[in-house]
Length: 607
Ligand code: M6R
Picture: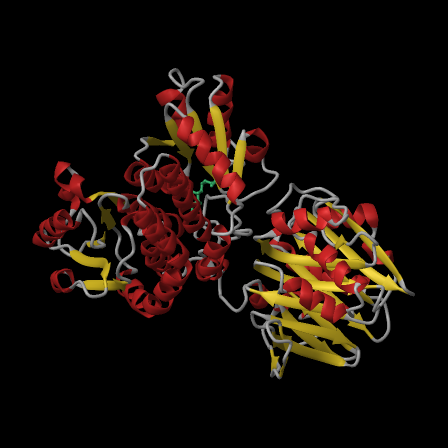
C-alpha cells in the first residue's frame, strides 16, 4: 500500500500542496517518497528513501517549481526502499513521470519485452514498466491520454496511477484498478489522491474513481472514461464534511475496523505474489530435512494453521514454534539440513530475529515471510516473500493475519505440487478456492457484522470467554482469543476442544460464553460432542458454523452463519473475521480504544 497524489493549479506552486498531501498519506507507507513537477516544459524530480520529513530536510521539496505535479509515499513491495526504487518513475527520455500504488502482476514479462526493444530500467520495481509503456505510445504519435490508456490495458493486477509529461505539460492522467483513487475539485485546482484526507485541507468536493476508469485532469475540467472501451463516463461529485482525523480512517471510527474491512483487498494483493519467489521458497522447503515455522503472537497462529496446511496437502511435517522458545526447544538440534520459515509482519520482532540468527549460525536455511520490505528479516533470510498487506496501524493484527494465511496456503500448495501430492482435480479445486477467498471474506463481512455487534453488546460485560476449535481451527480459536484479550483485557482461554476434559472444563459454569469454531470438516463429529459437554455445564454457546448446518444451529444458543464449501485448510481465513469483529465491538462496548491497547506495542523489538 502506497500513497499517491497529483495536483494542477491555475496559479501558484504545487509543491507545498503535494508535500502536505504526502504527510497525510504517510500512514499508507513511509519507506521512501518523491515528487515530480513540470515548469516551463521541464520536468523536475526529487526522491529518496527514508521518512518524508527527513527526505525533505535533505532535498527540500518546497523549492520545486511549477503548478502541476505528482508525488508518492512508498511501502515497498517490489525492490527494497532506495532512491532508485522510490517513485516517481520515468521513461527513458525523462519526459514522462508516473506514481503508482498497487501491484503489477505481469511486470516481469512486460519488462523483458520492453528491454528487448531497448528500454533501460533503473529500478527493481513493477511500476517502472508503466512510464516505458506510455513512452512507446507517445513515440508512436498518441497523446498522453491515449498512450496511458494503451499502457494500462496491458497491465494485469492492481493500480492507481497518476501520470504527467512534458509532452502535454497541462494535464494529469490517472487510472484505477482495485487500488483506491479519488479526484478532488477545488477553486482553480484539480487533484487526484489515494484517499480523501490527502487533499481535504484544499477541497471538500470529490469524485470517486471506479475500477477500470481513467481520468484526464486539466484546468478545463476532468473527463472520466472507461479503460475497456474508452467511452466517456458521467460521474457525480460528493461533498465531505468529515474531520481530517476521521477521513484518515476513511470514515471508520478506528484503524482496526478499517483494517478488518480492508481484508478482501489485502487478500487479493496477497494472491498477487511473484511466482518466482513462491517457487524459490517452496523448493527450499521441499528440500528441508525438518521444517520449522517460527513466529510470535498472531504470526505464530498463522504458523500453527500452516502446519496443518503443509501436513494435509503437501504431506510435510512442519513444526510451528513460538520464536522465544526456539533456542531452548530446538537450538541444539537444528542443523544444516533444516529449514526455518520465519513469519513476522514487521520483520523486526526480537525473538524471531534471535531464533533466525541462531539457525543461521547452525547453517540452517532461513526463509522469511514478512509485510516489510527492507526489514531485518528480509536482509538476513536466504529468500523471502512479502505479503503485500500495506501498513497496519492498529496494534491488533487483523489483515496481516489473513494475508499470512493465504500466502502460507499458496506455499503449501506449491510444495504439494512439487512433491506430486495433489491430483489435477484437487489442485484446480484448491486454486479456485484460494482465488475465491477475497470474495468469501467480503461476504462474511457483509453478512455477519450486525449479528456480531449484537452478540458483543450482549456479552461485553462477561469476565471470561472460551474459544474452542479442533484441527486447523485451533489456530483460529487462539487468534480469536488473542484479539479479544489484547484489546478488551478480558481473561479468556483457547485450546483444542478435545482438551477440555483434560482440565479446562473445570472452570466452566452457568453463563460462561464459549465460542466454537465449527465448520463442517473432518473434526465435525467430535465438535458436536464438545458442544454437548459445555452445554451440560450451563455454558452459553456461540457457534461459527455453516449457514445451513441445521443440526448445529439447533444445538447452540447463538450462531454466526458462515459460507459453505470452504476447504478445511482455508477455513481459518473467513472464520477468523467474525472473531476480529467480536473483539473490536466488545472493546468499543467497554469504552476502550481498540487501536491503542494498554501495555502493547505494534512491534516487539526488545527481549
Ligand atoms: O511483527 P510480527 O508479526 O513479528 O509481530 C508478532 C506479534 O508481536 C504480533 O502478532 C502481536 O501478537 C499482535 N499484537 C497481535 O495482534
